[in-house]
Image 1 (spheres, rainbow, N blue to C red):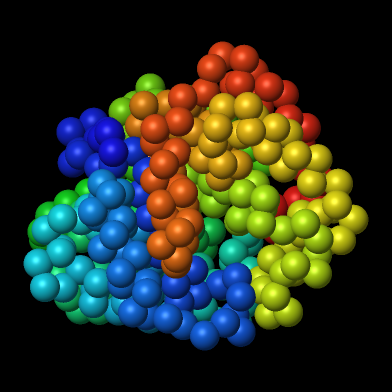
Image 2 (image 1 turned 135 degrees about the horizontal axis):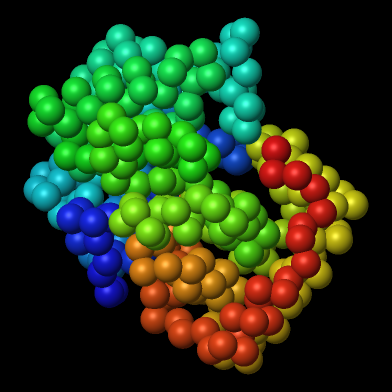
Length: 325
């Protein structure tokens, strides 16, 4: 797989990374965990050159970092560019999680200081390559949270720090305290908000952009033909775009992705990922999967080239029916 850099001066990473959230958290909450397969998938991703491995303390909570730590043991840690996050807590509380249902935000500096040490312990490492603020806490000035994260860099506990789901103003405020290595936000053929301001700003500033859910939570890969295809305990059953009428309307988007895929000899998932990759040299999508089959499919997107005609057709896809959350 070809490489890029994690922002200006950052380490080399494969142009596609791996999001590990679904291995222990979210989506089908009733499904049994298969840690052995997940560990194989993480190590296979490294073999394929998908070296950016993304997790978070809130996934599980905590169990995802523990799983990733086990996968990177026995000499595999050196092969990975390891990223985790802080700032979301899985709890029912008075501060809404905004676009993170079931979560509350905690950006207090003392919480950040405690959390980096806890994450390192679960991950079985003395540092992470990228420490990210999962969401900005509206009750805490971002300068205070970011300052605590910069302390982790100064202490050698994190090599770089990044943000997630932020505005350009929030990026600027953080930059005034310490360099921003990356911004992680949703970007896909049916979620393009970041293209207006955030992604162009990141490109101009040499900040890596890490799209999560680049496959529209699996929808753009053509894995769901109806609401009933979603498992009963699946988180997506509560999302507006996956409601019965909305999902039926959104199938038209998948149909057009399928048409492009058929024309160029690729899968719908590869076309969707190739479109994301085409948005910039340092746009590094982190599709999540816990199966070797889908991992190979995702990795193959790095070798898919979309023509100007293909890109134009995909750029003209209609907006989806339904909000993100």
